[in-house]
Each structure stands twice: as C-alpha cells, then as structure tokens.
Image 1 (cartoon, rainbow, N blue to C red):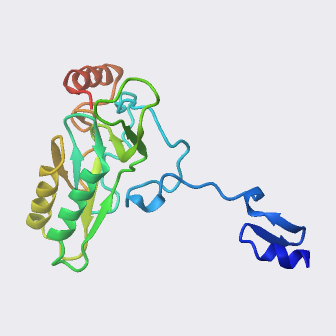
Image 2 (cartoon, rainbow, N blue to C red):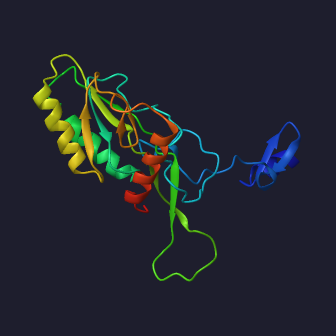
Image 3 (cartoon, helix red, strand yellow):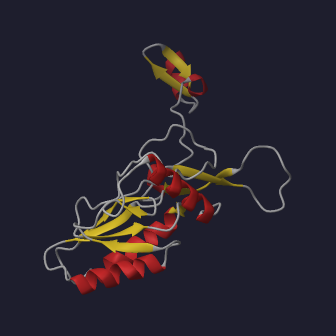
Length: 215
C-alpha cells in the first residue's frame, strides 16, 4: 500500500532501496559549453574560461607546421601572429569548398585548433564581477604556420591559387601560397636563405615584435 501511494506522486521513485525522492538523487552535471556549438570546438576542455594570453612567437627554432603535410597547395601566414575568430576560419573554409566544388576529388585540410574560449561582458557594464560569459572560440596562430591545405586529383595550379587568394582575402594578415617544395619558415626568414643561429632567432624576434599588434 505504501509503495502504491508513493507511485502516485511524480517526485518519488521506487527502487531497490525503497521509495526515494528524486531531489536526493545525484544528477549528471549540465555542460554549459556544447561540444557541437561550432565545428571547430574542441572535444574536451580543461577550463571553461581562459586568460587572453599572447600568441607565441617561434624564437626557439621550431619549424613545426610550416610545411605541407597532406595537400598539394596551401596558404601560410607570413607577416605577424594573430588570434583568429572561429567564424573567420569557417568562412575561409566555406569559400575554398565552394570554389573547389566542381572537382570531385578535391579535399580541404585544416591545420589549426580553436581551443581558446573567449569571454565577453555586456556593454556599459561596471568593472568587476567576473570576466563575462563565453562568447566564441578562437585560435592562436603564430607567424609562419600553415592554415589550410588543398589537394586532390585534377587540381589545377590556377584554380588552387585563385581559391587560396579568395580565402586569404577574408582573413586578417598577409599570406603566401606554398607547395611541397617550398622551404620551411622561421618567423620572417626562409631556412634555405640563412642558417638557424642564435643571432638569426634574435633578429626574427626583434622584427616580429616591432610589427606585431595586440589582438
């Protein structure tokens, strides 16, 4: 009789341990940041909010990400380090796919990760009380890194250059179109021109810091 009475109410649950209130059960935590909120959103994050930070400058001699890996043509950042909005990168990728759509075997590869959550506070808000709510994802891309690669059977050089130029037109910064034979880049220096030394790294750091603006 007691269990039948409890079953009449929606806020009671009859289980192995007897009638239990649903309010006392441990419900799974609700995620405030949806994984599929954007196609570039990371699969797992450590913190929901992060400091603004700075875009790293490769002064230690790292050449990772400065050459093509999968495609035949690519676009590489060559003037300064930039923090990109995920919407900007998405627009550039859509332009590449639209121009290369007639080629059935065309592929577009992305070489970045939007793992920086950007928080924004409302207009005319007083100072203090936190840094604001999550607004969008961003990616810190240093100078000399490859952003997009394209390739596939039947890819003509003229069409590839046209697609990459149109995508670069909608992104901040200056870019260069590279191929498999293009040498690696350390900051503003191509590796085949000058060997990597301590003086070269210092010169690159001075040139980049003088031209880099706060983002």
